[in-house]
Image 1 (cartoon, one colour):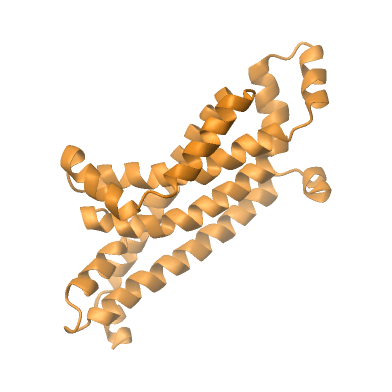
Image 2 (spheres, helix red, strand yellow):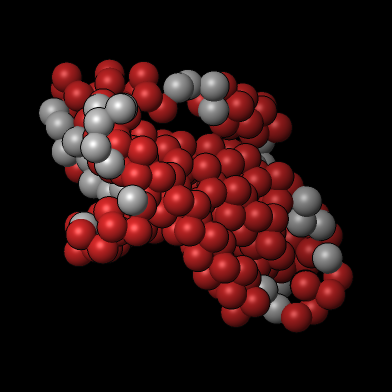
Length: 216
């Protein structure tokens, strides 16, 4: 039954999978940018760092299903609330790891860079960020796995992706192909999460210098 469901709806499944993957990747890129900007602002201040970590911890307790429901009223159905929800949850682990990673960079290294006339921004981009990147990338990988599932939940607000198969199957449990629909959605999300994690591992090999990898 599952095989026939796949065969009959292969084009729909492929398109939904691409939408799902694209939504997660684009929101992940946006989340990385947002997290790095916030981390740059707060990581030098213990008080602001604590606030950022606290927000990250509290944010993870918010049910994604409830958040997408709340956003439907002001933003309507479709892509917009899905992007907001996925990006929000993607930011949380990345921000926490960015603050931790930047705080672990040796102050003597930073002071040496500033001593030779480098600006704070240049020091951040050329010294601190590369040294903290392995920890930040770990947060990105955690975030990617988490929001792959969150993206499926956004189908409740008619968001794109494989979640539509899951909700469609659950809404007609006991009917024809209902379990197959749910299985396709769930298995598809797992496969996409595995693929994205492999890509992020490859990104790490390309962006983390061999010296830093060895020292870690």
